[in-house]
Each structure stands twice: as C-alpha cells, then as structure tokens.
Amino acid sequence: MNVVAIVQARMSSSRFPGKTLANLCGSPVLLHVVERLKKCNYIHTVVVATTTNKEDDNIEAFCNKHNVECFRGSSSDVLSRYALCSKKYNANTVVRITSDNPLIDSKVVDHVIDFFLKGDFDYVANNIIKTFPHGLDVEVMSNNALQIADKESTSSRDREHVTQYIRSSDKFKIQNIESDIDYSDIRITLDEDEDYKLIQHLVSNYGKDIEFSDIVNIFINNPSLKKTNSKSKKRHAIYNKKSLIV
Image 1 (cartoon, rainbow, N blue to C red):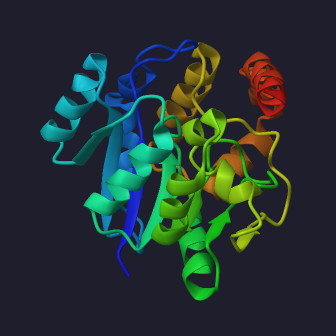
Image 2 (cartoon, rainbow, N blue to C red):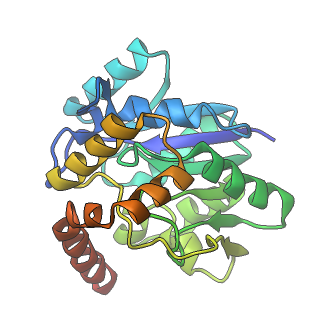
Image 3 (cartoon, helix red, strand yellow):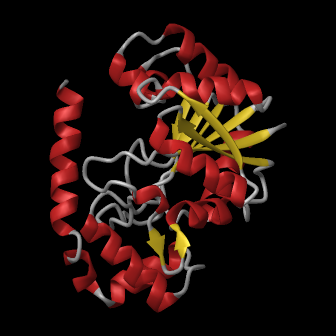
C-alpha cells in the first residue's frame, strides 16, 4: 500500500503573502511541515504540490534544495493537481496536508492513516466535525475516491477545496475522527500575521518538535495565548460561513 502525503503549497496569499516560505525560527514554514511528515511511520513519500505560476518557482527551488519531491499543476483547480500528482506517484492512499500547518503532528497523522487502512473507508479525516486544534488537520483518502471526484466534480468550489465533493457525496464511505476533548478553540494554523506571531512564540519557547499533547498543555497553562490570534480566528469563521453560502 503506497501512502503518499501531498502538501499543497503556493506563494500567493491575500492575507499573508509568501507565508509558505516565511522564516519560522530559522527554517522556512514549509520545511517544518515536510520534516514533521517524514517522521510518520505510514507515509512512504512526501510530495509538495504547487502551481505552475511563476511565483511558485521559489517553491520548486526550495524542494530541489531540500531534496523534496515537487509536483506542479493548476493554481485554481487544486483537485486536478492532487489527482494528477497521485497518479504520477502511483499512490494507493493519499494524505492531504496544507502548507500553512507547520505544527502538524506526525502521531496525529499516523493515527488517521491507521484508522483509514484498518477500515473499509474511502475517506477519513479529523476535521469534518472539528475537535482537534485548527492546524492539526489531516485528510486521508483512497486514490480511487480522489480520481472519481476529479472526474465527476464540476463545482469550482469543490475543485478548489479538493475534498468537498467526496465529503458531500453519498457515493463514498467516510469517517470522522474526534479527539477525546474538544480543542477546536485552539488555532495554530498560519493565515495571518497574528497567527505567525503565535506559532513563532510556541516554536521559539517550546521547541520545534512540540506535539499535540504539548500544545494542549501549553494552552491550558497559558489561556491568554488564545487572545494572540483571536481576531484571525473570527475572520476565518466569517470567511468559512460565506464560503459555504457561495
């Protein structure tokens, strides 16, 4: 079973341009993501899937420098980018990770993959119902489900967000994994400058290898940390609400 982690990445971002390669305590954000995924027991190959846009030449250069597999595809049709990348690397199982989650936890990723592989599922994620901190999001799907979605999906929104067709269709057997306690009020994803300040604080003060359990304890012992990016959290909630209406 060939398990391929595909990390979608691009330099353009309206809220935080260039965040993918922003310096996070001495290393690019994307390197943090890749290094954490390489610690996973189930993942055979990590591929950075970026766009063919000129500004993303920098991402390909990053991959070449750090000996990371790189695939380039459509900037708007991210679903096709994933489907083509999966074909190229002969994936049986695809793990979808986004480059704005530099604190992604290899143990959480392995847990979701393990659940997927041991069950009869087309798609398993830990964010259909959100209980994990935002920034530890993991989606695992069969290549077959991904290719069907690519073939059948016609909605521009579904094609931009990759897995929406799978999640909303009754053709697939899907499952959500929840944490024992709801930690969805913790935001450690990188969308805006205040998110960056929080993540930088966590890495610089607690080390680049902090895990899910560490993060939870840090926020329990330092509840005021949630205020650091509370405005970003509210703006993201409004954006998501509008996105669902469109």
